[in-house]
Length: 145
Image (cartoon, rainbow, N blue to C red; front, side, top):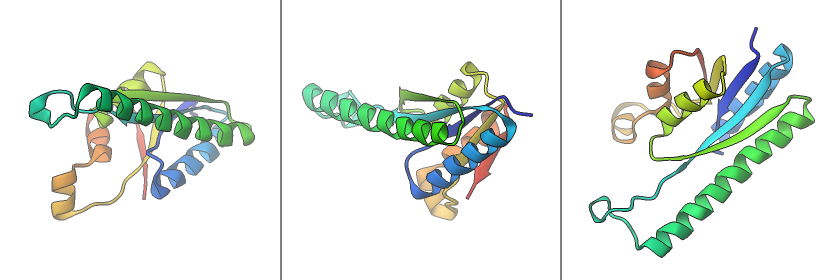
């Protein structure tokens, strides 16, 4: 049914459950997996509360390295399960939009991700990347909690 599945991960415990489910689903369908994460951009302007350029460059480099290590680890787990996997990192401040764009560019047929299940004020203040993906993606989205 599915030939390519994108799994979005942030390295959290809940996200790890989504990764395991995505690997199992890909194995069942003989699908390729795309492990995806977003390394958040550091604000650069004074109005955004930016730090100096050298410090910001260092923080961004560390975030990118950590993000790449995260998706590489997913790729290794998928490969160990016999699932081909591509590991991708986006560098953006727009997490949900990056997930949608990556899924479309990779010709994925399903997005798998976790929801932290925030409610009320917590959801209002923190927003919901999962909710944004659900409401803006033309692709099916499997949400795990």
